[in-house]
Length: 356
Image 1 (cartoon, rainbow, N blue to C red):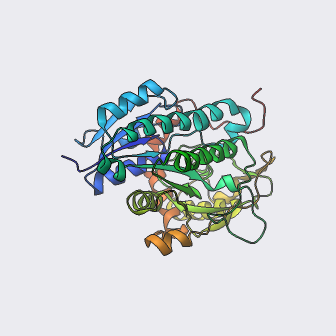
Image 2 (cartoon, rainbow, N blue to C red):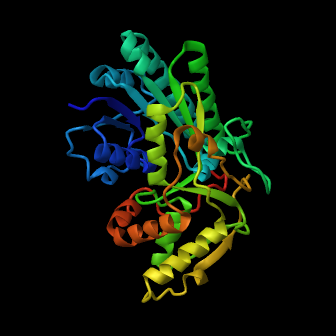
């Protein structure tokens, strides 16, 4: 019998599935994956653990209070790790309503269901219960050439996506201060790694390059992001769930700042090395500059010194080592890629604001 039960929302997504694989393979947690299975949810990412005795899947919408109450009643969780969210900036520009619904209303719904469940627990279980809210560095807005996002950086979200994530962060903090709900919060930099939905920069570029398609770089390619390998991220999430201070927020970053153009160049170099017989060599010749995204933030970079200082975490992968692992995975798993691509996403350009 597993020692503790965790509800993980959005567990069929990129980070959620990596978290579940990690927990099932390295701990005795019983994991209940709650996912609506929107376009970005993919249970194939969990095929290696789907028959494990400690893994359970519930298809449900976090905005459905009745369904969430049933999950809590049936599984009696010791904690919840909330990752379910609409998460792609370009999609939020074209259709912000889904982001408001899922990221704000969904988080509110979960907080209320969790609060009612927690308030009915006996004192020992109530003390041990945790609501871990997983968010993004995009809530802080855009940095200039210097400086880093710290936990006390003022929020200044610039896209519908980041605005709704900022709102959800504020809700979680308010439920802690107003009602005493035991919460921990995290904000992470850009994740990358295996099983990532192919609308994101790195898998999109790999997939296009493998097929000899153009590699579309927004604007002049000088926007800077801080990159975090997904397996490093999920180890940090478990650590914060178990040892993070109540009511505290932790920034998780990879200490890997790169311009988008530099990322694409490194991807091309890795593909040149791993696929010496590719007819698309050198892959850099596929790069094509396209019109920039509306309101494109210039730079994100996280100061992850708090989690290192207080909990001893630091990333294990360098950007070079993580990127090579990622490219190798996409080359080896082209069938997974193809099945995802045969679905609702066909690499179309999103984020031009034409969704009205």
